[in-house]
Length: 405
Ligand SMILES: [Zn+2]
Image (tube, rainbow, N blue to C red):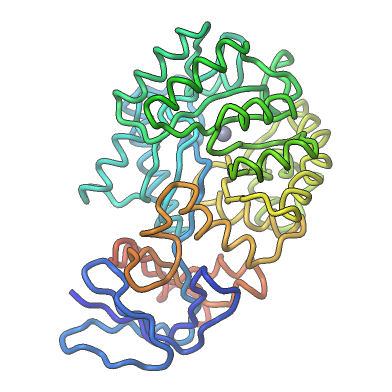
């Protein structure tokens, strides 16, 4: 089956410009040809006229929890259905074609990944991390997706169980967070040296990448020195952290939404609506606002100093996540192009899938979105979503509903 997406303004994820009036030929789920101007349409091909819409690689969010809304008494069956719906709506309603999970209980993410790969369920491509591994008195204990481990062997055993269950990477919690009780603070580190060394040693020995939640300079440096593949959050850092990121070629995933989305900071209708629905407590709002200025400063320094960065939101539900986080990147000084590259090519690279995904180039898997207006001019234009293509198949077509199309 050959599909031609004609009259497209292509933002390919490689160059920061627009290839105007191009057509993209998809054959058997792969991009066969990106041609400037109208190319020859093979006989029998299906032609979709994009009428000047902007065609981009599908969006990625590399820090996802599939919960939302949180139902404390939910059964495993209810969670599974909720997570599947959340994942599916992220793909269909926002064009998030790939995600990396950062803490999902009972390996529901592994099950969804398998269901998606076999075509039984229309969900984003999933890079699964299973449980969020922390300590007693650790972080995210109220969420239902944290597993507590204590002592070096406690971590080793839990990590081995994750491997056996089919995860792609290991999510390790090194320090506190913004959301949590009074004893869970982001400037505190949680693991003993022996626990850290055991956890990273078993991951290295078995070839699993560590996705490290680290929120203060001590935790960030420990994660980087021990070989973390990505560091999440980094609310407080120092110049040594940035130097280590570059030296180790590790990834930074800043999750700006965690500290930036409060009633006083919301500056767009989408942010305001999200904050209102989220229903944050006064204590969490205060903690987020206290942490925001420093978080912003380290995001800006990391971006300016050439640290490898990818877009991960830590926001729920998935249909709001990538757009809000990309908009916050731009609000904090990134260009729309930097935000788009972070949510496409760089995210795919972070997940080890850069040879197959993340850009619009011949040979790559056809995970694509079309939006009506140019997102390089205004990042909010990514919300004018018209079409979502995954594995070369149209999984969402909003053209009839979109105003002005
Ligand atoms: Zn998270």
